[in-house]
Length: 100
Image (tube, rainbow, N blue to C red; front, side):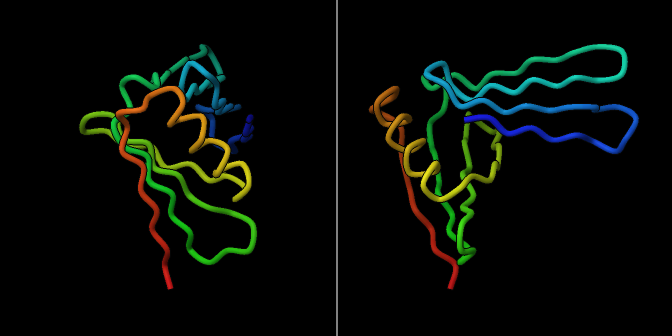
């Protein structure tokens, strides 16, 4: 699953988020350099799916130690990501939160 954002700022020109069997991978293309960051599944201890009532989108929070990443996905994709997370790390805590 890929997300791509084109930044209007001078620093980040393009950001891609990839959910893979490795984990949550982020690629940043900046004006003068590139950056790669990965949250491997075996280091993610909690994933929280938050449904705020949007018809198609849900937020997923990936926690690794004291850091958390919040990313938005189509609800169908979010469910698939939860299944992949459980498959890759059975010790991971998975929670669901619904805002009313």
